[in-house]
Image (cartoon, rainbow, N blue to C red; front, side):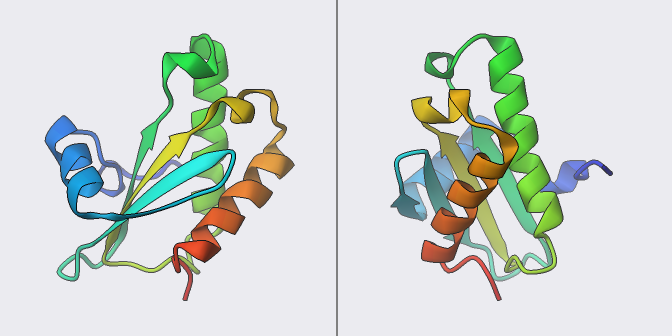
Length: 115
């Protein structure tokens, strides 16, 4: 699986904060997603927040990998000109990829992330 390029990732804390402050949020039991419009951006960016409550590093890294993979697989359907910050909630820690995918797509649909 090819990696998401750096420019498609939100890394800086102040960028996360801006999405939290100005973005709209949608949630289900597994995820909270914040979406911020960036009309001048010709691509979308994602930021991941997976706290230590989720588990040890191995678990957190797996969760992040799953989330990135969903965005990778769906990237042609996802609206550009937006920043997406995804916060994983505790139940995600024990989920297989297919469940993560289903749950994330559900929240993304509710956030009107798809074309």
